[in-house]
Amino acid sequence: MEHKRTYTTEGSREDLQDADPQSSNESVASSDSPRLSRSSSFHSSPSWLSDVVEDLDFTPLDKLTMFDVLGNLALPQRLEKINRSLNLKKHREKVKAEYAKQKERVIKRTDKELDKLKANYTKGLDELIVRWNDTAAVSAREKISFVVGVSNVFITGFLAGGYPDWMHVWYSLQLIYFMPLRYYTYHKRGYHYFLADLCYFVNVLLFLSIWVFPNSRRLFISTYCLSYGNNAWAIAMWRNSLVFHSLDKVTSLFIHIMPPLVLHCLVHQLDPAYQAVRFPAISRVRGVEQYGLGDMILYATIPYATWQISYHFLITVRRAAQIKAGRPTSFTWLRRSYAKTWIGKFVLMLPEGLQELAFMVIQYCYALLTMSPCTFWFYSRGTSTVFITCLGLWSVYNGATYYIDVFGKRFQKELEELKKEVAKWQNTPDGKAPAAPGGTATEDIPAEKLGSAIMTTAEIVYVAPKREDGGEIRERHTTTTTTAPII
Image (cartoon, rainbow, N blue to C red; front, side, top):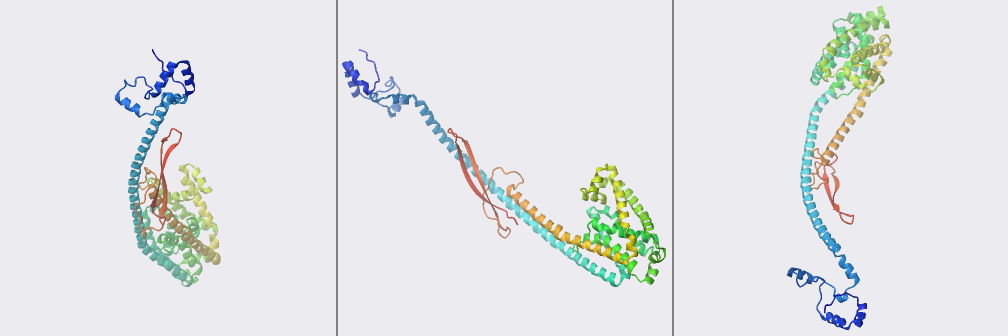
């Protein structure tokens, strides 16, 4: 008799026994039998499969419920979940191994970068020490210039007040001393085109008027007007300053302030008898001929025009290639310095071919404007004294501005550049973006070379691919780097 296998619940087993006693007996017999396999081919399966099946915990048939059937239907999902867990564990181990490898690589790289940083900082510090030593060597020359500058002020004041008849001699000696130095230094720096400016031309005229043509009234009037005009007012325009330690600035101030000071002594402070013998042109112009403003400007225009035309053809035209290549002149300097002013904007608005002509016209108008009060300076000792005093005070103010503002800001700027250089070494020792963030500290930089060290904290974050539940594996590593100080 063929029996069918049926799976029933315990609640319906009694009904089955009442309906069929023989089936009931078979059911009872089945309860004493060993565990049944869910697979009908259990005994025909290979040995390895039977071992696996024996290890599995199967529920007996007489205790099977509907929930077991449903649980068996979800078995593939459970196996897939277990597989994902195993894969995630392997991936996590792989991530940790990769992170350890990356960490070791970053540590090696940051160690090298820190060594380069220390080397660069030491090199920069050595260069700073070398510059400081060079400055100390240069300071000896500046000390000499300071002593000479202060002595020059005392000697000039002493001669102007007590011995004005020696002022032209003192001026001539200084001119012979300063001019060769100025030519040498300017030619060495590529500034020798400035030596063709009007201020040097005025000093040449004064030297000729004193020692070669003392009887020439027109030469004297031209020299006087140009000295009290363009040359004196250039102290304000060119910002000449009384900076004793700078030979260059002392020379520039000498070129602009000494001609009107010497002429003031020759015109207003000499004894009339000595003036008539030694400088007859001055005596005749003051006491006999009485030149007016028109005559003075006319006589001053002739040498001015001679200089301007010569300058244009000898410098602007013949040296155009050198100027275009970057050799500075007074025109290029003024155009750059006054580019933001209304007059500079006006000149720059013109075509390039007309800018030089506009500059010459403006310069001549400026010369006429500065020469217009020359009659007051020439015939009035008091106004001339006030004017010379104002020139001296202006140069002192420019010197104070240089010492406090320019010199102090220059030192501060050097410190800021050093700070930026140190910060650049800190962030990118090779001048390139680092391959990985952060760094490690291997050893402290010597305290005798560093002031206070900067401690920077960096955080390395490795973000792995997202998990199935939407989260992500995130590992953090915080390192501290000791870098160069801000001096």
